[in-house]
Amino acid sequence: MGYTPAIWPLLIAAGFLAGLAIYARRYRNLPPFRPFALLMWLGAWYALSSAMGICSTSLTLRIFWHQMDFIATSFAGPVYLAMALDATGKTNWLTRGRLMAILAVPVITNLLADTSTLHHLFTYDYHVVTSSGIQVLAASTGPWYWVHFVYSVGLIGIGCVLFVVAPREQISTRNKIALISAIILQVMAEVLYALGI
Image 1 (cartoon, rainbow, N blue to C red):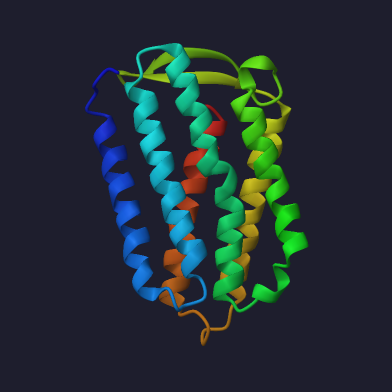
Image 2: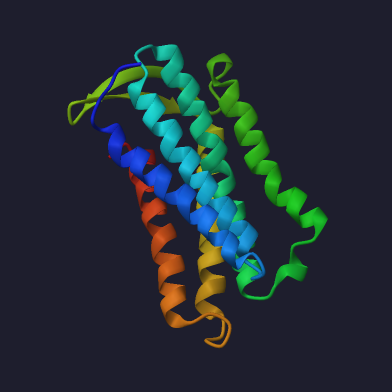
């Protein structure tokens, strides 16, 4: 592992998100507690695995940590949607069958990400590039990467719409803005990454 100061914002973010997940336990009697806490753990995992990827000196380790990133990114959309359904009182919509259907794409995404060195369906042609003085992993994207990307952004979009149309008595305007703003920042970062910007 090689040290670079660029890991500190990621490590701080991981600690902050893990702290939010732990703090949220105080509100475990509120409906959206579980999805919110899980979303915070996923964010912490993503930040930590990204930091580990940046510190890795071998291409094999960088690929491994890149694959670990998708544990968080593939499940973020479904968990955000579950949080929106819980917070807006629509938990009865999320039946076991629908939940299994919603989780199918993230499960397939992780299987393809974990085996991506064997095919060109997800990411391939791994190489290290220097961006702003930091060596990072770059890869070409296959067709399933775009399925994952559109699916995740779509679920997050549906969750945002649920928050927007929720009555003010259910979710205050301030909380709506916070819940939507936080996820929009992540989506914008994912879009910039996907477009290679």
